[in-house]
Image (cartoon, rainbow, N blue to C red):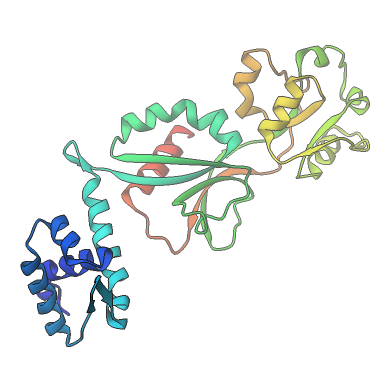
Length: 288
């Protein structure tokens, strides 16, 4: 059916009646009389050539044709309503669902959110933190910031931050370290990427000692254990500068190892919205 010929008033009447299954409540919602509402529905049925309701003593029952049509009309009206609700203060507001690795969220993004909000008040950013294991489409996300090599099936990506790893620990623990070899007698806290310590010891020319103790799935949890003196964590130093400035963690040795970077990702098939473009442009500029 051509758009100019869509019977919008009749569709609104049908949708309200399909939700309430009573003409009385539907008429009250739309501020019309029951007779006017019934007339609109009858016109729609005549136009389609099918019955959409069966009248029963207690109200209405949808026919098979009505059951097929109702969710489509409801979804369309809901979509229009949600879009209109985003207009306020003379501008359009776009909700942007962003998945972020917790380390990046705490260490870089959250302190700079006021800058983004000031630059783009039309974007309502919704942040969902994770431990780098995320399914963008399955979780209803528009964008996701994650750590890795930039290669994820079905996703487009742009590198936003290099994040080499280096040992960090509590100041009291660092006081007893004179060289990298001294780490071999301490608890080396591990993430699920088990090769990080092996790569770091390879970088400094030493064999990696046996790794024991708990394995954690979050750099933030590793950092907290290290700050409490439970061992030495290998962390992206750039994202824990505030911990260092406040004296919770120190970096005892300079060598770093590259295990990946932070990337902004989105589905390859997803059409970029203005909000997605605004965030990507701001993020890359802020990290340039």
